[in-house]
Image (cartoon, rainbow, N blue to C red; front, side, top):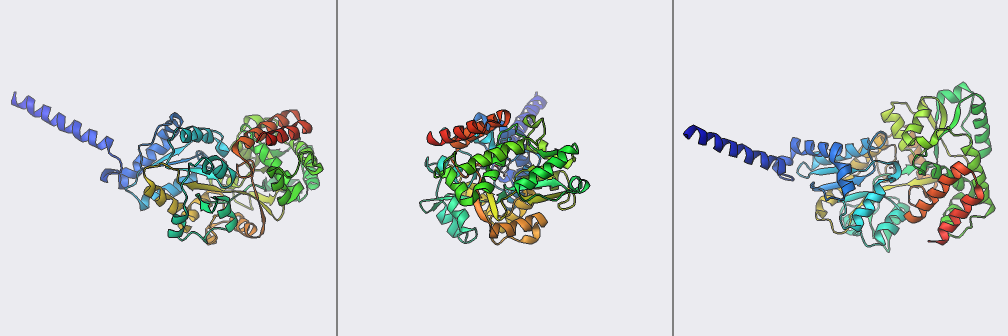
Length: 447
Ligand code: GAL
């Protein structure tokens, strides 16, 4: 009898210890190795499902983005690891939802925000996406005091601070600058066919004709998610209109039947004549692979593709792949800036601010951006961390006229972008320029 009771006591003790271990979060046990392991597990497993179900995270800090998979996640993972090193007592959940340009994440986020279940912080583009979706709906906290405390006021270009501000309140912290008006190309394919990077649309078509005649797909496209095609069109518009009128177009001050816009649509149609046949079944990484394999020569993709080529495909910049400014956009910079803010109503404000402080710091930005392919948003980052593409782009950014990307949510509201993507998608299959421009005009009047 005595022996039996002793076993029951031990069993009870084991159950109690097990229960304490699995349930703890943010306590001593979640620090150090245990904390890192916990965040590692959520990174791999629980992020998407929890976010999709709209459930609140159990972690102290839930970081929401669409940075999963090749070419996307390395920078974020490095930033989270750095954060965990500095704050082992804060548990982190990487709640990323897959899908380039936020194709799926934005919908999940909208549901959560509407249900008053915001993540602790989330990826949002500077410009309309932040201001018109979330600031206008009173869902974000101003960060002016935080900027003062962290000494950030003069650390970002003023134009960028303006893009994350409304009525003198600053609402998010930019972690990077991506460039959208760049074409990456396979250097051996260009060499083999004796080609030079084209500067004008005319030169682009000549190069593309030569490639096509030689049996190489000139331009890789993966528009399974529509935005890569929209991205090509916005770059053509920037080339045809210049940065001021490009902006005026989205602001409603230039009509879609303006002859330059019609010309841009014709150029778009011509360029689409050079893409791979299976474009509709590929995502951006799959299409970039065509370039790395030499099956296609060029791709217009934001420079997250540079992170993908260098880090995931282990290609050398200026040896295996080269880059040039999208034709006729020299001196202009299509800006895509990923930022993070403080949603209203989150419980753990201080912990969110710790994360924002890290991603806004030189150390955070120089950890994240070399892996992501972007350049730091800060003006005082350490350039020695960046390769030739990075340092070239940092220099271009300083000198260039900036234009906000439509495809990545900065130039116009999310509602407009959704309709623009639909119109472009129909255009890619039907090639009807009038219909494309009419749909874009109608979408604007419906605003
Ligand atoms: C953009 C985002 C980039 C990259 C890209 C592809 O919208 O700003 O950081 O993630 O989508 O998914």
